[in-house]
Length: 78
View 1 (spheres, rainbow, N blue to C red):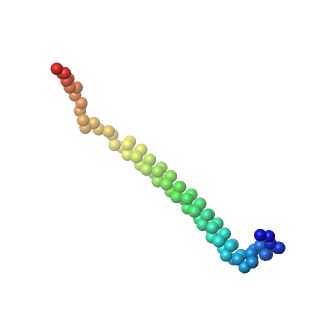
View 2: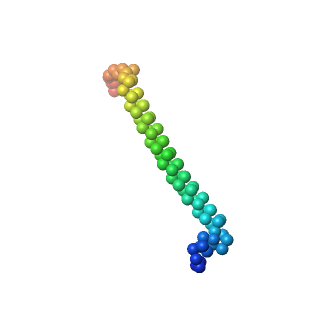
View 3: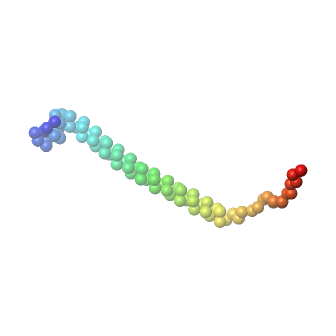
């Protein structure tokens, strides 16, 4: 499809507003999803970092205690 001028390309024989609106909606949604994904990734990384730090602090505070005792048992096989 060839156009005689740039204005003919923009109007696209009356279909221009629909076509350009579709392109605009597509690019707005594309940019929105890119920004949303970047923010979601940042939030997930921050959540993982906080959880890791919390578990590291928790392991420092609580000293492991031994609740079981082990005694050697001699088993005879007759």
